[in-house]
Length: 33
Image (cartoon, rainbow, N blue to C red; front, side):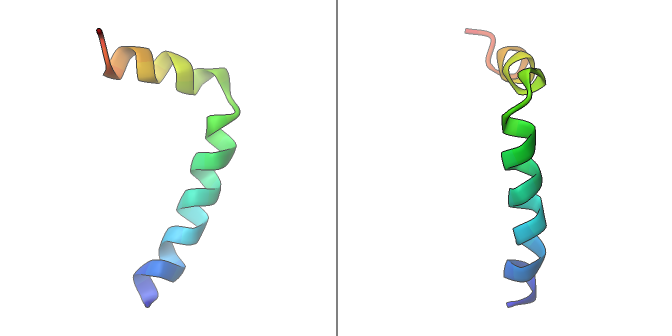
């Protein structure tokens, strides 16, 4: 249960970071297809 509580702020951070254009650049670098 503690891990679930710990992952909530992480998901919130990911959602917030998802709105940034930096995520697109990071994904492009992570998946060079």
